[in-house]
Length: 358
Image (cartoon, rainbow, N blue to C red):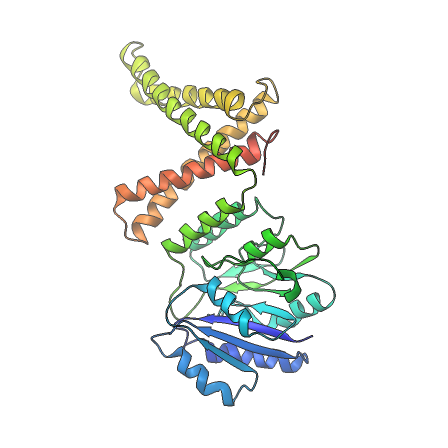
């Protein structure tokens, strides 16, 4: 079966020649009938011109030139139009994905798997060279994606699938992670994950930015079933949070001013009281559960999710301010929004699961 390997590029002249050499060697050693489809977004560093010059060296190389930087997912979407293989492979151009795993993925698909995924997070998978901030962001995005699939690494950019799988399926080309879109919309029967060592790029710059994060969150929202019910729960959860804030402030004032308790101790007690208030109201009103149903277990989960959301808030504040150079007040506003979403999803998915529509 012929393999078409789609590689999106933007300013990858320092990586792409090495990558093509390794891909060609993998094809030859394992007798893979493969073509390479490079989709270049008008790279200012001349990546597209380098690819054109390499056509004489690589007879199976096709190059698509696009007018500008249009994104990874749309590059894959466009690459499919000129790809001729029954099997479609996707990988990044920055040498973060090991071409030496292509034959293993190819064999998995030709042996019956509908999708083969190069996984960083299954047993024996690894990440090398990434900062802790990037690892944490990747893990956070993966945890959100796991709401929709049991795949260990649904955010991988290194995968292979049978072309027939996406026949008559409309794939959203916005954003930078297309695998999750395919998993959600096609619901493949047999999926094979293959452990890989993901190596962070050593040359060039990462293409991920705030816009890609926005599109990712928007796509997640679009995947949710029964969105009308979820919208209602979401706003009820938000209203409970607002009421809980007033409860927190009221008890802080009363305990400090009238009970004479040191304000830091008052703040701690007020936090616990407001958290308990939020838990009870969400349990009875937002998620329609009996109060006595696994009361202490669910209270513990609610508390844990609240602490996790607080950690997400602090992390996002740091990332938005330090990495995206956003004014810290605006960063905190965005961070609160992200943390609130994490808080809602965490409680709906884990704490209050009885009537969950996920």
